[in-house]
Image 1 (tube, chains in turn blue, brown):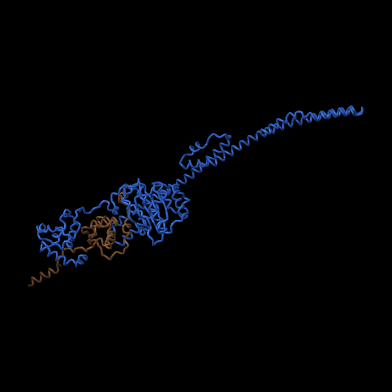
Image 2: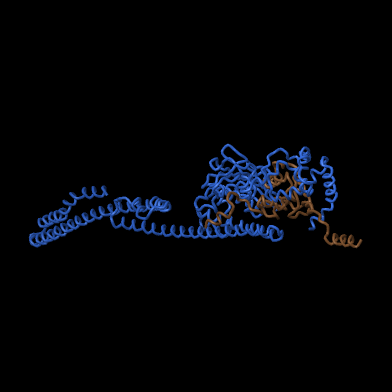
Amino acid sequence: MVGTGSSHQGRRPASALIWLVPPVVLAVCTVTAAFLAPVGVRAPAAWCGSAATAAVALTSSEAVRRGRVIASLRHRCAEQEAVLKHRLVQQERETQRLARELLPHTVTLLQSGAGAEEVLGAVSRSSPLDPAFAAAHRSVLRSVIEAVQAEEGLRDSAHRAFVNIARRMQAIVHQQATDLREMEDRHGNEPEVFSDLLHLDHGTALIGRLADSIAVLGGSRPGRQWKNPVPLYNVLRGAMSRVMDYRRVDLHSVADVAITGPGVEPLIHAVAELLDNATRYSPPQTRVHLTAVEVQSGVAVEIEDAGVGLTDEARRRAEAVLELADRGLDLNDLGETPRLGLAVVGKLSKMYGFRVSLRSSAYGGVRAVLIVPQNLVTASATPGGEIARAATLPPPKPRKKPGRPLPPPPHLELPGQASDSPGGLPQRRRRVPGMSPRTTRGTAADRTTGSHRPPAPAEPVQPGIWLSAFTDAINGKEPTGGRGTEQ
Amino acid sequence: MSKPERAWDPGNPDRLYILTSTSDGTGKEVRIDLVTLIVSRTEGDPGLQPEHCAIARMCDYPLSVAEISAYLTLPVSTVTVLLKDLLSRELVEARPPVPVATVPDTRLLEAVMHGLQNL
């Protein structure tokens, strides 16, 4: 534009003079003609010449004037064009910035939970654009923000609905499991009913795991919470109980540690999902091995199957699923074949700091190793694992004395004492010698057990002869004890 | 809602069917009923399930199945399966219960009495 301006400027003085050229030329011609013409036509020629000169002068001056107008117009036009081009460039740049920076930034801000005004304030800055265009941009931004917010809101509510449904399912499953336990206790004597109940119990546990999975993917925590540390052995058994093919899982040696309360349920769930994968993707006649060893950074739970194994590509995909799990539940991901397992494991790993790796196993299958971080591991109060439900009643008999070996008769010196009592019932007699230190327990349970005592002391009882006769007699009858069972 | 939380025995995630999952059901044909007496033969070895260990430990003195079930708070059916496992591994012994004191048949006694009176 500078160039055009300068050329314009340069042309101007020339054009200022140039308009004089035609009239001057014409005037010269007129004068020449007037001189050269015969005297008779000199006067009309001079007149005509001067008239023509005047007309040409007028015309050319007008032409030049118009030329100037045109030039100035062109100049203004060029200036305007420059301004417009500049503006266009700016707008283009601004639009590109909007597309490349502002919108993604806005979306991330929104996804991180910022409010609409906040985001708008953060991303809009004073731009050199004219206000109308800036306003249009802002309105674009605003409508995008609103759309994204609406979308996020929808997603959130879908999440919440999912989690809510999962929670309700968990509650129902929980209640049902409790009821089943009661029924199991009630019908413990009827093997058929009992095994059916166990079957139902297992089914309920599977439903519960699904509900837990949905809750976890929805960003909630899995199922129930545990207050006290649980031995790893029981945690792993808990995980086994939530797998369809739990009978195929071999629980090998387990490190004698416990998992702190908050880590129990996530670990159970994660191991259950890995076990489920292992049992699902291996032939039904193969076993799945489950072990746990202590390692420097915590406890490593290993799950090894003899299935088809993982190709490198499949492994990468699985690890990607594990990695991406923290994006949360995407309804699209739940497509036609929802494969929740690894996503759930990944999510739990993110939340609780587990480390999961999938490698191919020496058996040809997959070897999944889940490392529980040290902060979730604590010392176990009951080495070897707890008895299923007897937390309240661990030692039924506090008999610590080394008199456990039954065959050696520890009661030889007792008969004298025993014979003090009147020779009443032989059973009672025999009970005394057998268990001198145990007489502290006068419960009915002891009496039944005491009444059974005879077989063991039978051989050594010599001191009380009549007593031994009695015991002999009783023992003689013992083989016919079938009668007892009949009764 | 705290009730189910309490009723669900705290501190143990095991389900009952898991306890018996290792049993292959090939145990010897042993009739075990509530009054069968169980005595352990060994202290139990470390490779056993905790329930097996507990049974082996508590049965150093003969206990009836009913008692074991009560102590372990496990249903009798579960205990039975566990015991069959232990029996097949010969870690415990089962004995039929001692017959209740053999009181002679009253009819027989009456017959004897009548016989004596008729003498």
